[in-house]
Length: 630
Ligand code: PRX
Image 1 (cartoon, rainbow, N blue to C red):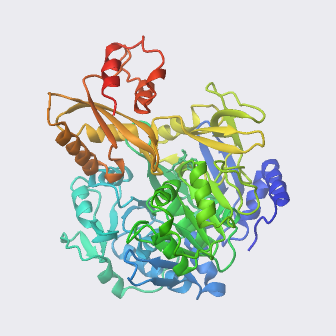
Image 2 (image 1 turned 90 degrees about the vertical axis):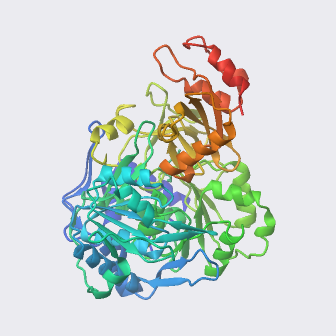
Image 3 (image 1 turned 180 degrees about the vertical axis):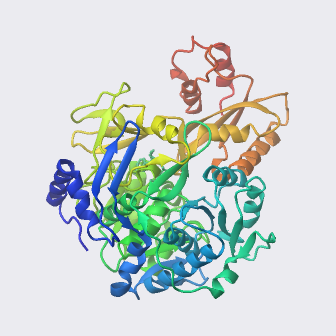
C-alpha cells in the first residue's frame, strides 16, 4: 500500500502539495474506481464559499470501500464486532459478506421508498448494522445523517427536522455497560413532531419491548429476508452530498455539516493510510461512536477504503471493569488503537491494576483525538499502553474538516507531548491575530485558520449556506477559521490551546453553551441561565451553569436534580451540568449582553483576575456570584 515512509519524503510531498495542490490530489485520486474521470480538480473561492473538488467525476464511494476489494481481499475480515458483554458473541464480517449485506439492506431501503438525494436519519447502537446502514445509504445515493445514540428525543427531532428526513433507521435498543438503552421509544417521541418521516426501519437487537406503528414501522430482520444480494451502485457526481453530520455552534441550534462524495473519500483515505501508517493485515480500532465524525471517517470510511480490518465495540471502557479496552486489544490483537484523551485520563485514574493483566504486545501505533492531550495523560499512554514502543499520533481536526489536518505520521514525525505537530500534505495552516493579520514566523500564538482548501473541507451547512459563510469564512477574510487557538513553537510545531468561541469540549464532545442554556431554560422555574466551561481533570472541560430562578426555591438540592433531569431529557446525559449555582442576577452589559468572560473566571475560581467590571449594568451582581461560587 502506497504511503509516506520517511520524514524526508513527508517534507518533499508537503512541498509538492503546496506548490501544486491540484496535481498532488489528482495523483491520490487515481487509485479509485471512477465511472467517469473528473474534468477539473479544483474550483474554489472562500468568499461565498464555493468549493468543488473533482467536478465532472462520477463514482460511488461504496464501490471504493467494498467492490474494489472483492477480488484481492474478499475473504479478509472487514469488521470485527466486539459486543458489550465480554462473553457475548464476536462477529467477524468479511469484505464479501459486508458487500452482500450492504447490497441487501440497500434493497430494503429502496423497497421502503428511499431514493437518491433523500435524507435518512440513523440512530443506532454501535453494531455492524450501523455501518451497513451508512454504506447502504451511500450505495443508493441517499444522504445519511447519523445521530449519536446518546442524544435525547429533542436533539433527535431537531436534527430530523432540519434535514427533512423521510426515513429513520434505528434499533429496539442497545447495551452500554450494565445498562440497556432504549432507542426506538426515543425515536417514537421524536417523531411526534416530525411529519416528514414516512418509514422507520427497526433492527431487533436487544430484548427491549417496542411498539410498532402500523404502516410506518417495519422490522429490519423481516425486511431483509426477501431481498436480492445484488444492488448496483448509484452513480454519483463528485460533488453530490454524501452525508450531513450535526455539530454544535456558539449560537442556537446545531449545524448540519455537509460533506460531498469524492473529496471526502480521497481525503479520509489519504489521511488514514499516512497518519496511522496502516499495513496490510493490521487490525485498526477507533473507539469513537459512529455518531461523531471520528466514527464516520476512521471507523467506517477510512479503514474500508484502505481495505483494512476495523473493530467496532458496542460497550464502554469501564464494563465489566476498567481493563476492558486492554482486554479487547489483546483478544483481537489490535495493532493500531485510536481513542480520546478523556478516556485515557479516566482509565489512568482507575489505576494500573487494570492494565497489568494484559500484554498489549500487538500494539504498534496509538492515536489521540478530540481535545488537547495533556502531558501527563500523554506520558501515561506512552508508558503503560504503548510500552514506550508505539508512536502516539495526536490528531487535530474537526467535523468540518472531514479528516485529520495536523498530526504526526506514526513513527515518521518526531512527536512532542501536547503537540499535534505538523500539517499533513495538502494542508496550509496559518495563525492570525484577533484582527485577522497573519502571524509570520515561529514562536507565535494566534487563532488557527487554513488558507487553502483541502478535499474534505465542509461545503455548506445544510439548508443554511449563510450560516456556513458567517461561521467559518467571514470572520477572517480569505481564510477558513477553525474556532481554535493555537501556538506554533520554535520548531514550527502546532499545539492546539482550545476553543476561542462559546462552545465547550466536554469529554471530547463539542457542546454549544447556548444549546445547554436552552435545555436548562425548559425547566419551568428557571428564568435565565448562563453556561460556561471550567477545567476538569478527567473531562477536559466541565459544565458550570449559573441559573436564575423565578421564585425563591429553598429546596436547592432537588432543584439542581430537576435541572439535570431536564437537560438529560432535552439534550442527553452528555450535556448534564457538573456545577449549578443559583444566582439572583447575571453580569450584563448595559446593552443586555452577558459578560461570559467574567463568568468563566468565576467558574475557574480565578476570582482575583475578573478584569474590568465597571461597564456592567449592575456590578454588585458579581460580588453575589463570587460569594456563592462552587
Ligand atoms: O477544539 C478542537 C478539538 O475538537 C474540535 C472539533 O470537534 P469535533 O468537530 O467534535 O471533532 C472532533 C474529532 C475530530 C476542534 O475544533 N480537537 C480535536 N482534535 C484535537 C482537538 N484539540 C486539540 N488537539 C486535538 N488533537
